[in-house]
Picture (tube, rainbow, N blue to C red):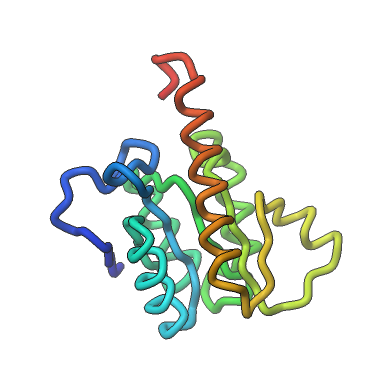
Length: 157
């Protein structure tokens, strides 16, 4: 497992805290098998104030989540070796403590309506995507996550 974050020295990278990172950003888990894509997303999302954790496939992400890591948003590719996006989502959705983490699906693969229903992303972006659309989509999901956390009973957070 390789953990890369914008601010690894930060004491609040969202490990157990529902994805809060710093004052403006949140923790985003990027799952993509393309190394160049991961590095670009690290720069873009990190530059926007988010802490970014990178996983090269769903299996690596599952290892992080199994250890208690809780990002605010998961940015998920579909077509990956080892554990693809479909297998990852099936695993995630089967676990109540993880099922509510927001999913931003980013894929170059054409997806049928049935596939989209199976993946059930909160937002779906086609690759290549516009930088502004990416940042707006992540912020929308971060804001939604924070609103849900603030409205949850204190024992449920």
